[in-house]
Amino acid sequence: MNTLKKIWNFYYEGIRSMTLGKTLWALVLIKLFIMFVILRIFFFKPALADYETEEQKSEAVIEQLTK
Image 1 (cartoon, rainbow, N blue to C red):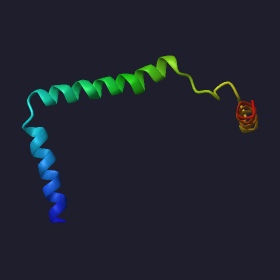
Image 2 (image 1 turned 60 degrees about the vertical axis):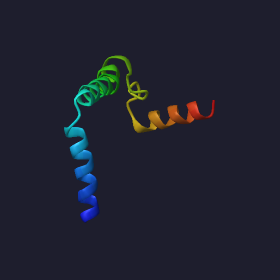
Image 3 (image 1 turned 120 degrees about the horizontal axis):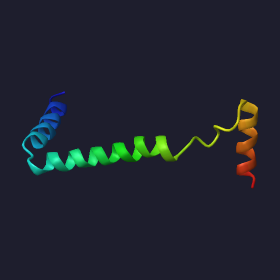
């Protein structure tokens, strides 16, 4: 348990003492949010959204796999 606490303190103190690093991490997180949330909502619709029943969905998947 003591080893886990040392590892946690190592990373916690390292991130806490960053100056430019915090800004860069914030930019990375914002970019990931935009990529995975915003773009998915507006540009990528679920592939099986056009099918109503599970049977239709499974047939569409089988058809795409055997093409």
